[in-house]
Length: 385
Image 1 (tube, helix red, strand yellow):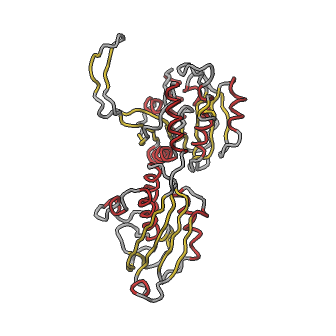
Image 2 (cartoon, one colour):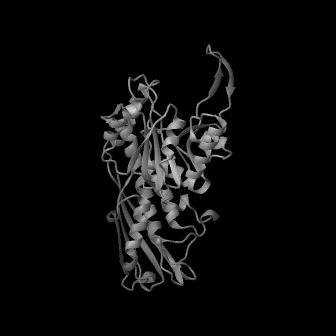
Image 3 (cartoon, rainbow, N blue to C red):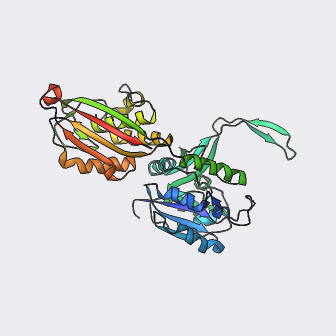
């Protein structure tokens, strides 16, 4: 198995509840088949290696056409009469250690939700997208008479993706077959096999298209996403004194020196300036508010982890990073030889091409504490769109 993630997309339904005369996943959504909208949304996720789509035999040729030109490799699996059979058939083709099962009829999925579910699966074995139940719930009889209220505390509405370690999910399918049970989602399969699924934060917009009204709502959401937004520019600055015995971490790269910036976290001035630029452009609180130096959770933490959190927050506000430009001001150390490594690490976290990350250095010409080599500063500018 390689180190990536395979997305399984069950798309073998017949559109009965939708009221269509065909598979609802093939119905157009703003001029594209809904299945293609969903597949494109999954394909842009950096963690996903490839996709396996479970399809009805009658739809196979049409789905092959829909999949042409996808940004990630894909395979088709035979769909079954139930979701459980479709996912089980697709799972046979998976060669990665993590699998993410996502409904074809959830076309509004974003990389942030997928990343949270995958991260949970890597750490805990599973990551199920879910949102807390917000509405008051009532139990009623067949005639619509209310019988009692259902407390909504601790209740969550399940969504997809539902991610798990591949070995765990295969074990869960085998257990369900032995028990002769059929489940409608992977979290229930895992529970039946004795595992405790871990929830990951989904989003209200990650809706499932079940009715024509849902389709209209999904189209409205997509239109709002595609509407042009005025770009925003952010600026960030950070400065730290040097101290003996500290690590010199810059741009996520360890310089292996016996001195480095003094601070509560790893004091990576490049990433700290960059984070404040991103947060400022998105109109979010700065890093001092989000990761205060009075909180022991952030003592010695890698700023790459903090940057990943900041990027998730920016994406949750529907912003995407266009490019960033960073200037380092210091007499020491020389960073030019390590800039390519920094650009690679930063670009990966920002989910942008490496040529969208600029890093350069200058000196303070002997002026002040920076000019005397007592510390290091960084300035960052970013463009969000």
